Image (tube, rainbow, N blue to C red; front, side, top):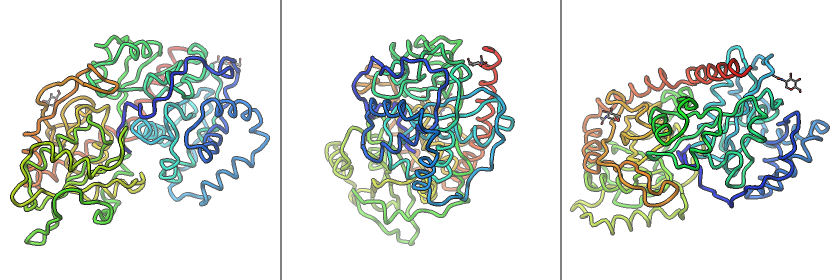
Length: 503
Ligand SMILES: *[C@@H]1O[C@H](CO)[C@@H](O)[C@H](O)[C@H]1NC(C)=O
Ligand SMILES: *[C@@H]1O[C@H](CO)[C@@H](O)[C@H](O)[C@H]1NC(C)=O
């Protein structure tokens, strides 16, 4: 749901030595029952113990076929409805022996998680004559039961199905969809990707991205161990190559957006008066009883997301008599969840002068919004705004665009791949600034303009027809350029090229 492309939320201790199970070289790489184990474990432990999981996995996987009812029982438990309404049509079984094993934080939530699901769903639903079998594996981050439970039933069912695909190592192309620190040998506790020596697989692809202007040398080294490195945008192609990643390995593979799921015609708006908490200003009623103009922003509470820029622009430009409201859907990132206090504190320390009429209202939504309810949230507002300092891709932006919302977003890094003057309001950058903390310390990223954001927010609410036209164009562009069938074809073509090259 939310973009956290660094994937570094849970950084456990370094783990250079692999457990003995992984040093063996099994001829067959069985993937069956792994999800079952992961889920069974996540019911009892809040954090996955890597060694325990590995141990269970390798001891139990050889017995799994003897206990077919174990899976059925768990499926029944998790999936009370035997026939989900939206279950995709049965797929023709691939006659190809080849496999694509996609390893990603499928059960974790966050940017890499929803991104990897978007590829899997695209491939599953749009491969006409499958030239490979598809398999998935949890990797790169901790599992979240809350996220799993918020997934639509047909996705849960597909997860079970794809976890059972059996592949031979020598016939498998592995996609490691995570930050390079999770690649074999991983720098923290996670199932290594690839799950064995690189040369045992047909080909190994790293799929990653960063939000700053460069890639650090450890990550460059890890990228160059891969046969290919897939990145989502031209911005990443150039920053990766400039940082020293072998240009012959770097391939741009854009990201799909599920334009059928994010379709404004399918949804009724969510009633925000129940879920939004007023944390600043007063809820005003307009004189002519018109509904207020609502801005929405979705982000993890971290400096990179530019929430300080957003609050500054919004509070300087508007007051309580403007008939405007700002809704922030946010969740903690290395911080506690008391966003109301954080916002009040920020405003007090900012030196901004309170308008005579009082602050324009700011609402925080800090309850978990299930993936299935997300379209209704976009549907409830008039515009989406995110003055981020850097983005890998910016999933909430493309989701909002698919929902035909006018979008104001920083014109730098990943989003330059799809933001245009015609389909959105690209926010100009004042200058690049040095990152002073976190994993990108010393790199550069963008400093979006507070003044220009003020102007754009005022412009959007004063030119509603123009804004609607841009929203309409945004959805058209998403359908034309980033539909699942289009991206499925791009991915399939690259896989086909690889199979032809190495066989
Ligand atoms: C992979 O290994 C198996 C078992 O050794 C063998 O039968 C099969 O032909 C190999 N596949 C390829 C594509 O080399
Ligand atoms: C946005 O950035 C792109 C690429 O850097 C640039 O070509 C374009 O002119 C910019 N658009 C605006 C509105 O600043």
